[in-house]
Image 1: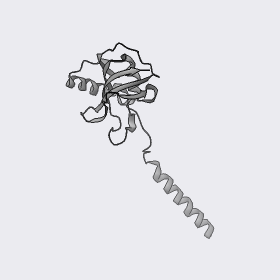
Image 2: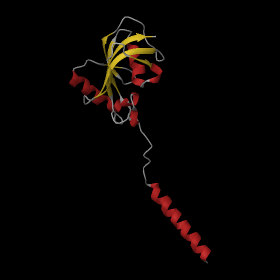
Image 3: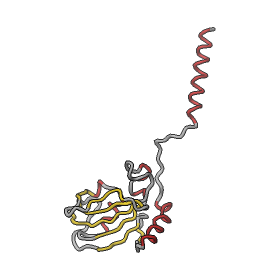
Image 4: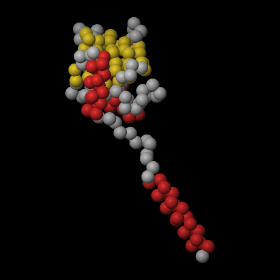
Length: 161
């Protein structure tokens, strides 16, 4: 009889525990925002900034300030660039304006750069308005870039190698 009550108590406790967890949201799940859902925000940002950006087939917007005359990058090129990165509220989260720039492989950076940089040649300059899906997505990046944040970059492509 004692054994029956012990098993019954364990069974009841297990049911309460399992049932109690069924309605909890899994905070590790992450749903990226599609570029179309951020398009109005990007268009408004362009208008407020007086940019004449063009929409890429990916949903990224760009404005070529100088097309450049040197080599064209591919999605796997190593590049050297100067850049400034900002949130749409104007907060700068990153920059490298050193004369020598910073070196990156385009396969190792955010997808927005992999898409946008090949639109210009070495020596060129471009503005990119990147939907969050092609930036840091629903995870963001540290405390400086929140989840699902579209990003603005102004990039000078110094070299392609």
